[in-house]
Amino acid sequence: VYKTGADDGVVAGLPFGDDRNFTAETLDSKRVIKIGKRYWEDSPENRTKNYSFGDAENYCSNLDIGGMQWRVPSILEMAEIIDYGKTYSSEPTIDAIFQNKTKGYYWTSQTILNYGNNTVDNQGFATWFTNGLTDLEDMGDTHYVRCVAGPKVQDSDLDAEIIDGTIVDHSTGLQWAKDTDNHSYQSEKERCENLVFSGYDDWRMPNINELHTIEPHYDEKLLITNPAGDVIKGPFWSSTPIDETHNFYVANYWYAPSGRDVIKDKIEPTASANSSGAICVRGGHL
Image (tube, rainbow, N blue to C red):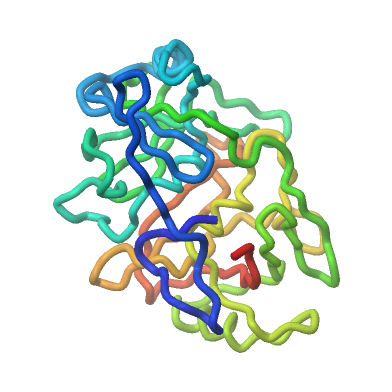
């Protein structure tokens, strides 16, 4: 889980995630950005051309750079290049190494998830590089796209199991306490930091990229449920600040347009004095 660019301090001697190490390379006379095992397009088209959802998919699948298979990034993949420390600044919320960038919407590959027998068609998610938020957009709308190549993030179900009332995600090394409450940011932050549960006392409030990892993606299991098995709808606090007014991003995994229940990844700014829940977390691969 990569750092957010905003709240990368230290808690109990542990960092908030992996360092965001970007390198610029040239493949087939095209500039690309490498992070880990993935490559990101950094072409003038990334800031000059707009596409519908379907046209964005076609553009990326036909991209011919380095002999790799390119695709529209998932929400989780997009999160690794967002710099939340630039939210509402004069710069787009993306790492400074990218040369071709703008504050517009960029398509992700994710479409809205249906819950139960209800359906919502022709809508997909786009990330807004003014603040790093992800919004639901009509597929016919035109937005920018930045293609990615390399191993997919979270290509299947979370590698998770329930242990002593906690969710242990073996893919990230994160352990989640399922109990939530609704209080102000400071109250929930203190609750997590003072929590002694399942034999551990190093719990903390997760940052926004860590919350991304337990969102429902595609056909994955909905892990955040109450004892009756009902989905806990959120919103949930993250430790990531949005700006100097001390607002914080909240992840809300529930959306019901026109009375139809669907699962949605929704990240939004919320004042720290408001009441929201928190899913406490510990650990993580370093």
